[in-house]
Length: 248
Ligand code: NDP
Image 1: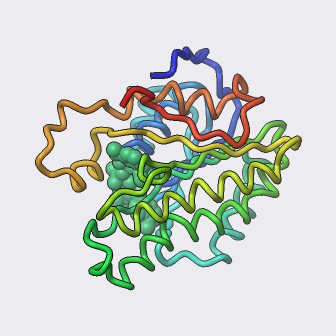
Image 2 (image 1 turned 180 degrees about the vertical axis):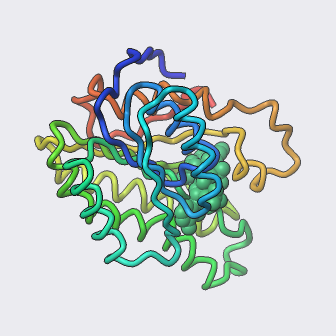
């Protein structure tokens, strides 16, 4: 794990949007960002889960979050432009954007990958991130320092048999981050990736049904890397893909 201890006020007065904030790693990141002072915009497709995260943050004494119900599968470019307008109107800027929401799709031999499944995985894991990033860049540029964090995977750096559309989408995510980061170099906004590594969540259990979840790190264990990249201690870091669990 990253040897990093975030100051309690690391994210004070920052406004940070987290996609897929209702479950798994996104839920933990949203709670941790709020615990370090951020006003968090909780975006996801299952409102009940977002409301539960909202309640947990408020109960813990964090700044009141905002909830944005949005399904990345069907969202249009206009939806993201409207989101940017709402954020600008409400907060005037966006300091952080964590692209965390993703779907696994089907793990199967290449010849059996369905075209519809492939399109859905690419829509949720790649196109939605592109449209959202494009729409939100103007509000990110209004922040003193803007941090965009994409979520990669081990199979986004080295292809693996049967990981199909998911692996391809994570390579695309790494490529999007590198392309954007190079363009942003020297500006007030930066972009990086985190590869969480094997983590005890619903997605991991779906991918590895026979695995004992107790052998895995929890989302909470990964948070030093997430806090580091979201806060100003990493201002000089741009275009990097960090492992949240370097030894796994
Ligand atoms: P989970 O499946 O636990 O959580 C994913 C979140 O994304 C859920 O809140 C889910 O919403 C949301 N989401 C999925 N599809 C959509 C959509 N169409 N629109 C909006 N929100 C959506 O996954 P993890 O927490 O495990 O994964 C988080 C990230 O980490 C992903 O990018 C994943 O690829 C990556 N990762 C995870 C690893 C692991 O071992 N867990 C390893 C490597 C990478 P809902 O709650 O409604 O289902």
